[in-house]
Image 1 (cartoon, one colour):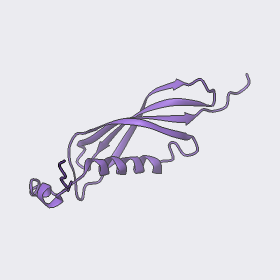
Image 2 (cartoon, rainbow, N blue to C red; image 1 turned 45 degrees about the vertical axis):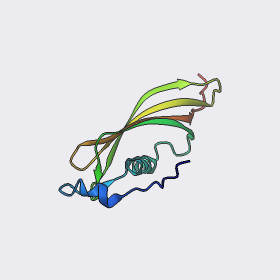
Image 3 (tube, rainbow, N blue to C red; image 1 turned 180 degrees about the horizontal axis):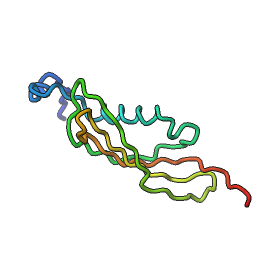
Image 4 (cartoon, rainbow, N blue to C red; image 1 turned 180 degrees about the vertical axis):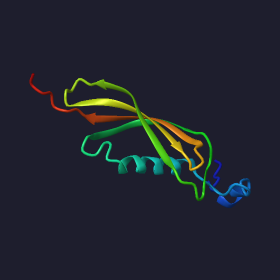
Length: 118
């Protein structure tokens, strides 16, 4: 049995970026971007379930960067239950220099609006 401790040596990784700045972990960048999207109210009162995502970290986010998130709805589909649907979003996270640092495809179950009588 091999027992090896897992460590994240921020100072060693940061040394590789001394001229640029210290990087933040990619998972942290994704969490920040999700927080920014939640602050918009985009899915308040309608979000039912986070169904998963595909995340691609494109470039490091450095200490002091400012992040912006562009959200595009790329797909929507009905489910067997009339009160909900599946919505697919594309998130593009950009830093203050306009560089793409992370992109993600996210699926959520969303409440559907009640049908109106015609």
